[in-house]
Structures are given as structure tokens and as C-alpha cells.
Length: 364
Image (cartoon, rainbow, N blue to C red; front, top):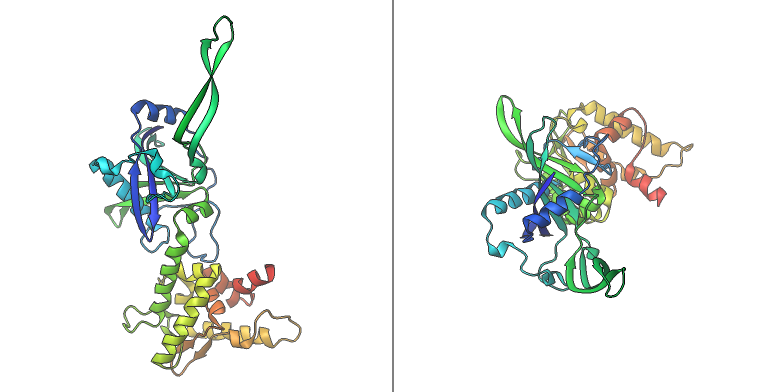
């Protein structure tokens, strides 16, 4: 493996600021020789249908625009573009620029590399590390051994060093790897992006994914009550509308309250942020009778005196067959979010009652 470029990246409000390190070829060669490649054994494939759970490590073969990690593809593309067209301003001018309270506050380190693929051919990839406070070393003072002999002795001399500012770059344990490759879709060759997450939660933190998920979740909630019928999210084969109130004014008020609840809870926020109303979703493929039976089972579960139910009847969405509408409120948004998850709704359809939101409250 050869490390060709090292850059620091600041991610803020969905935008990136990239600064390259002006490292010599010799320094990059030394870094390459010391770097330890991560293991990719038994990496699970990311499951977009399981919107309530993210694996601690995974791979995505095609990082598409509807994924919250898509920001990383944008960052990588900006990095590759700058590699070919960078100017002096694209370099970190001084390591001291990384001191606290400076205008540049990176969250990622990216190593642009050349590695061999399985066929022995060179390919371009990038390993991504989290930029932490211990990367930057200030007023570094230490003794180090030399090969010089102390005068009048046969002992190697120890020398005192003082470095005002330094970067201690990581040599192992990246949080992600990203690369572009050519894939064929319906006979057409397209550029796709492969992402491997080695440490998911650190990657989410470094990308400030919480803010991105907030934006995604808010947009998805708005799509359920969109005035444009073509953009509006509907559910089941019967294209049932989801309503948050009986009037326009009620919808606006309830949407605001629902959004606040969703954004304050990790499970709910991730559920809506990762939802996509495509044909593979179980909630899109079921018949209206399936939905009716599911809701009936939930009401029977609440009414069963032998069961200590974690939710009540007011927490269950209500379907109006005449209007072909599913009414969702602030009380019922947790169960509605569970219905959007393929695995959860399949269990609910089979009579196995499990709502992640309420389960998490019990665990807490």
C-alpha cells in the first residue's frame, strides 16, 4: 500500500473544508511502511430495511443519495477533485493553525492510497480516521536516543527535544474506507461508491450525522403530508394517506409536535431518516386487510388483561377505511415508526408484538 496524500477535513452543516498536509515523498513512504491495514473478514452488508439498527461495522456496495452516509461520498469526491486541482490555499499553512479556538476545526483525517486489488491491479481508495484532540500535540518535550556516543564514554547520547506543534498521525484502526468503482446497471457502466465502516459510531460522530439525520427525518415526515400528490408518501398497495390532523391547521401543529418528539429520540429519528418509500418496503407491499389485521392485533394486545402492555390504545394509529387514511398523532408516532421497519412489521403481522421505542424505555 502507498499513501499518496494526507488531508484534514472539517465537516460542518453538511459542508466540508479540506486542507492537505504538505508531506514530503519520504514522509509519505515512511507512513505507508508503518500503516497497518484493517481486517475486512466477515463484514456484514448494510441492511437498509432494518432502520432501527445499525451494525457496529458494515459495508455498502452502492452508497446512494438517500443514505445518511452519502455525505461521505460528497467529501471523497471533493477530495479527489482537489488532488488534481489544488492550490497553495488548499494546504494547511501551519500546524499551529490547529490550536484550540482556531477557524479550522477538523473532524476527519483522510489518507489517499493506492492498493492492490484481488487481481493484483492498482486501485485508489481512501482510509478515514477520526481526528481527535490527541492528534495535535502542543509543546512536545522529550528525550530521544541517538547513535552518537557521549564524549569520553562508550554510551549512546540521549538528546532533549522541544517541538512547539506536532501531529501524531494514526497508523492503524481507521473508522472507514471508501472507493469508487465501475459497476454495470442494466447494461450501462456507472461509477459507484463502496463504503466500508469499521467503527460505525465513531464515523457517525465525526460526520456530525446527528444533524444530517435531523434534516433527513424532518424532510421524510413532511413528505407524508405533502400537498403534491406525486411527492407524498403513501402506504400499502391501496396507497393509504397518512394524516397528522383533520384540517390543514391541525396538520401543521401536529407535524411540529411530532417532529420534536422524533428528533429527541435516537430510534425514532433514525427510523424516519433512513426510511425510503420504495417498493421493497413491506409497508408498501401489504394489502389494506393486512394493515387492518395488524392494528386489530395491537388493540387486542392492549385489551388483554393477562398482558402487561407497555403502551395503550391511544398509542395505536387509527385507520379510516372510508377516507382511506391512517391517522397518526404524537401519541402513536412510535408505533407508526415501527411499522415502517421491514423486520418489525413482519413480526407484527405474525402476531409478535414488539415496538423498539417502548422496549428501549424499559431497558433504560
